Amino acid sequence: QVQLVESGGGLVQAGGSLRLSCAASGRTFSSTYAMGWFRQAPGKEREFVAAINWSGGSTYYADSVKGRFTISRDNAKNTMYLQMNSLKPEDMAVYYCATRVGTRPYVEAGGYDYWGQGTQVTVSS
Image (cartoon, rainbow, N blue to C red; front, top):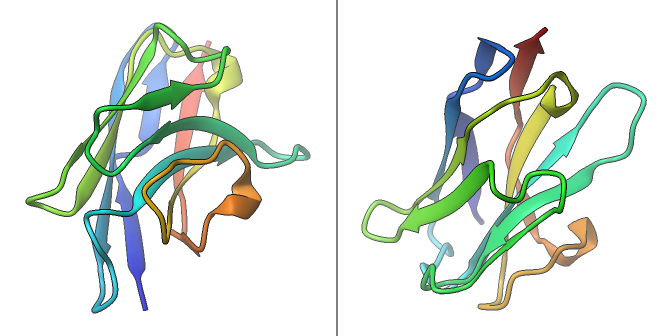
């Protein structure tokens, strides 16, 4: 089993920055697993934000966050990060981290096997 715990969410003004963290644990978690970030705003479906392969050498972003968000991971700490800069009100959502049993990241939520509980990001205009 794998457990994922997100942290770092909060309230920020538009144009500000936040860094989310996702700590992975569990007997079956492996640093070879791909990981990703998704978000869900009220009344909307969960959407892809960013993903990273097992080594961190390949990253993928939604067009809406490209150039503003940076995904990274520290396999020695079993932790993934999402640096969010130039935040906009439309970035406000619950952010979820996810991991899958495989090295290649997916942009589809259905491709992930384990999910965290989410962390709220609120952006005031």
